Length: 399
Image 1 (cartoon, rainbow, N blue to C red):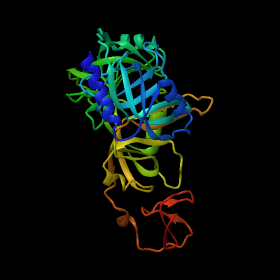
Image 2: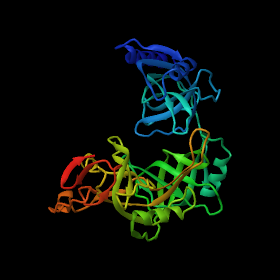
Image 3: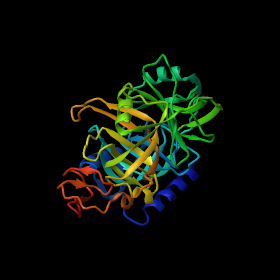
Image 4: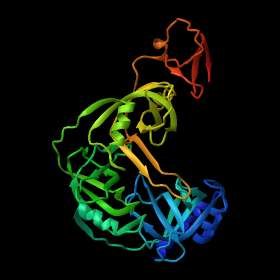
């Protein structure tokens, strides 16, 4: 034990040798973080010492998220370590571990208006490690939903579950060898979701799979987050790929139940209306609104987290004609005291993006039209709210 504490002391010294780092309790760190402006990050590194009180026990990309408090076993979520760098990527941290978390304080405010004191992507040193053994409980998807609904919102089970079921929708995949999909349960009103789970074999709609991890209640959706997926048997479901316009895609989405998504895959063709979320280098995706007509701005269809590289993302500007291949889902979030209800049709994340084969130059004619109307480089009439290159009465300018 003395050797363990000595090693931890050396590790902590290595973290602090290059700069003066203030040590703080979890309560002190939480108070200091919440004094910052909303979504503001502090400028000086701190070292927060405390006990892990809540975690899903899973590591993703050599990082783990957990909550801390000054009292061991309190269960309080006083301070959050958000995707912290763990010392051993093969050994998850557990509830009861005493750790030092080093990084910059952040006052995070979510889209729903909740406030969280945290350190994002900090470094962890383990001072005391508890030995924990968990049962792995075999269940089907319906039983997993029943177990998960007994949890409070944003709470994990202590035990691990091995959930067997049939993939109910077209899975999405990210660049970190993780997949997201739902499992079928016809008798439940809630959804079971395998969220960003590691896989070896490619998973498809209709496959029988085994998902292992801790159950998590996320606003009534029961998940295993950052767990592991094993393919038990391949299904024989034939997935249709259906070409549609943006307005047709909106109609498909609005016909779905709130929170549901299609089993079929759609090729949605239209124009980029505006960018909702800029291209992310970390995740290799971009989100943008689509329309059939650049003169009409409805913002009722979102191409959500579509996969592409930096070169392609640079071409995604208002007026660009694109096709996105993905499922269609109806995203729904109830109104809160701070925010209105959100009911939006969008693609499932991870869609495949294809630019129009015709370039903007090939679509521009040499005829000068003096009709006092605004046209984009594709020859579509746009209004005064359009952002981008505009041609009017033979003159080109940026609006």
